[in-house]
Image (cartoon, rainbow, N blue to C red; front, side, top):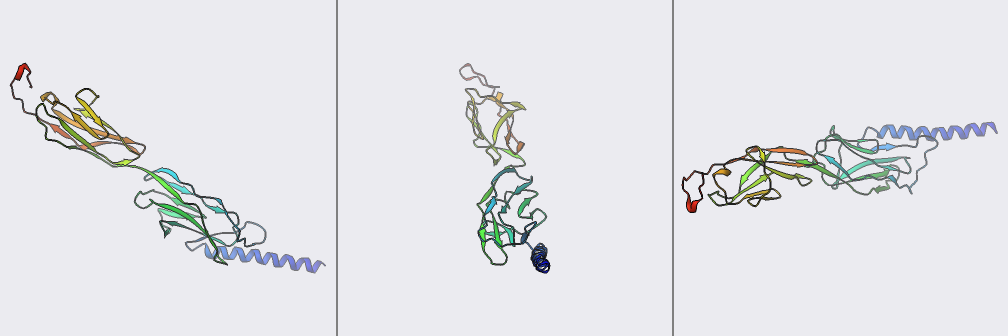
Length: 240
């Protein structure tokens, strides 16, 4: 009786050692194996994702972490897919166990839907998680003020603040360093500024700034309005 118990224990121990060795062999590949931490390794083809990757909002250049796991870790390999392409481990983006780490989010390289794929190595049965996307917050490094019309005395001055970003930036306008306020003559919608019935008193430097959840930027290239002084006073109104 004692010999049978010892033999059964040796068999169970052998199975556990085999699972551990297999996980160590495959750990060096792009696919990562998760093995049950204790007890014999029993393959469960009815496994399911008990941790699904979820979409997150993150600033460009910051760190992101997508989680994934399944109900049974016996002989299960994990890999990640982005837009139908396998995610290859790099110093910027790599697997940590079954999870995916992005050390510096890049909107050009990390846009799309991420999927976690779990595969039983002994049978080839694979299951796919729900998709997860990154909502990447970003803004241009600089803004530029562009003239949309040729300014003339008593005409309209139309300027655009060229700055892009996500989420949609809020735009502010400045004249000679002073923030503009909306009046009957000064209006703006989104990134476009309009000054109606301009005179030489509107001469000066027009600049803008744009701000969203990713940060605030100011225009590096501004517009200078320089209307000539006519010295004339039509109908008693002088423009100097």
